[in-house]
Image 1 (tube, rainbow, N blue to C red):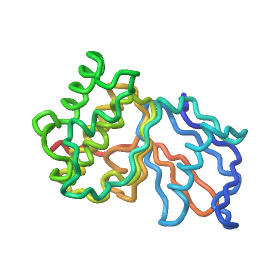
Image 2: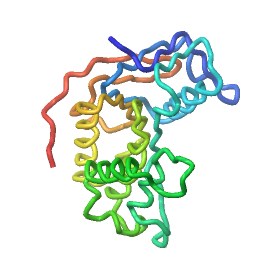
Image 3: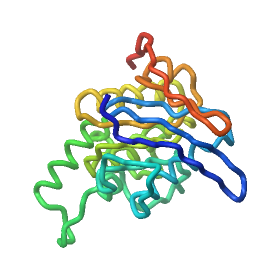
Image 4: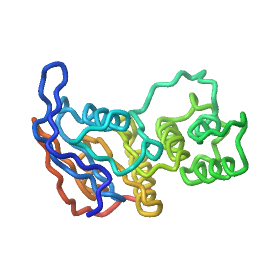
Length: 222
């Protein structure tokens, strides 16, 4: 099994509280792994620690991907209705910027492709603040995809979405894993999404964790 993240005997404490002791796991490459566990177990803290090892390497963790090829998408953020950017301009912020103050032809082609892939082309001129929750979350995802990542980390990305938007987003993410060789690490509490979409489940418990191979159920297409 090829791995994109490897952790071996990690001890992690926050403010004197030990979250994990001798934590060992691997995240398979080009698969969708759900990171699960009770509230407060340390899921987001673990992710922030792993991302921090790009600038401060340690012997307990190994990330087989560069920071430039890693994108983190946080939970749905509240945006004011007067947010000044439209969807297209917001997504375009994720492009790797050259020294030019405008998009190159290659960047424009990539932006158009990402907007189409995330079903945002028809509403690309809509102010982001006026978009629905599902549209906003697709815009955040599209912005991350403009960086052409190999590792995509999603932190409760479906938590604030209605059922249709939730499955629509997960179907999109599943297609990305299958067609673009992207590895997705998805923090979630949703057992139905885990059953339907996860290739693996990394289940964190007090001071330890376990990687489980999942047999996925029938998928919902919306």
